[in-house]
Image (cartoon, rainbow, N blue to C red):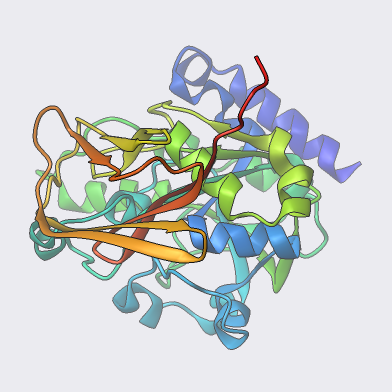
Length: 331
């Protein structure tokens, strides 16, 4: 079988000492795709990933994390493909991940590339590579100097040490640095759309973001994918350099939000907290919300609430949503 040939190549790669004894040891199993949480809800609800071109045509992109500058230089045939990576923590993800402050956006190379709450889809890589129409590259497909390949021998010959490169990039050698960045963005593409039959895991960056995804999903979709949805603080998946909510405590008298203390983008943000209760919505806003120790936010209610839905926005980006139900136990 074609998938078995790909699987053997990847198993051999996983046994290489420079892969096996590092954080990269599990990367050869998967093809990686990330998107903002609101896009992820649509993908899971519809049971397929669409190419950017088709998603735009059907108005299915709620949050676009692509840079207009980069997309403008990308061939339309590539934009009409579902695009996945051989690894997480790509240079593209570096610029987009997390909620930016105005300061970090102004300093970013791609200020319009923004993925506030990234959700990772991990697909079985051999199965994706074995699809009749799939192909892969040794570098980013956003430029012009790529070559598309399809067979197991080509996969074996990819420059894996550059694709899986995790060390600091030395910009004293600009040409080499640009090559490493290009290879880190090596891609797998499938024309048009990709169903979710090969989906193995759905990774969230924190427990709070897992709760948000579960709350956003329709009931039937949540039941279908619940066992695949996990929260992980693994540094191998996320950079975790910008603001996000790590956990939340919802009670009948208050809400406590705990933000990442490692953020390099502490604000200020426009914070908006919405509480829906009995068809009424209460809103609290802080247009100059700045994160500082102890990196939490506590909202106390004027009265006891038995059921409510909480929604938290930072600079108009949804960063948390969950529903509280206070069950009165008979003992």
